[in-house]
Length: 346
Image 1 (cartoon, rainbow, N blue to C red):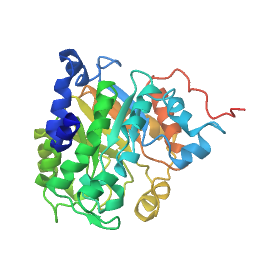
Image 2 (image 1 turned 180 degrees about the horizontal axis):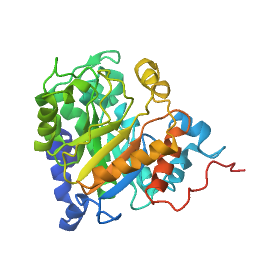
Image 3 (image 1 turned 135 degrees about the vertical axis):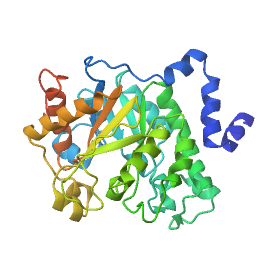
């Protein structure tokens, strides 16, 4: 009981360090090892997956009919070696759930975890925080939570047990900090990210800026230098060609961390991206085979300057994302032929 109370009082970074030192020296070493490149000598390893494995479109169009929800992750892991977990943007996962994720996936499977929206400068209702944290901060469920050093640390501490399970299983990939388009250079400074990057300094952290002005003109090098100096990973995108402030430029290829690069694919439909009211509507795009070949070439270029590149398809309408991801794996020579696709279980 005393040990539990002590853990509850520790700030996030101290808690992570304490948990790390409780393990053997070899276990501590293993948790921070980045998988070696296994592709070719010309470029680093390229991992491919989708943003979520339980998207409604996947369930309706991709997974076998009548498949139990509990069986979907293991089936997904037969096709891919990585997934970007989207649910963690909205809630802190229970450690027992995360332990099951580890149990049903192969040893080399990797989970990228999207950090909670509170840390990303999004307006956050208190009801999206863990009940214990709501109570501790004395918040009404309908209240909006402000991003302060205290709330940031509390949310990260709530994540700590689940992150530790993934690290011990050697299945923790990258933490994704996906910022709001409202986080702009006109109203904000990059040093506002300093605290969250410090607190998560023991992890690989990717930063997805979603306001184009961070990489326009003279600001571009300032932004990339800021991330490079903190060893944070710049998230490159494949997005519509429209020069709208919410659309990051696809022609930018930046590596700010020598170990890891990141590429997220949002589709190329400008109108849908800007006017879509739902995630499925905004990212409703089916990549052609010619476009997949372009993505393959770009992934290889990015991988020349880093040990591994994580490529995530976020075109989550219908089953477009998993099919595009499988075609990319095939284009890169990771698959001789596509795995069996959706079929009836009975």
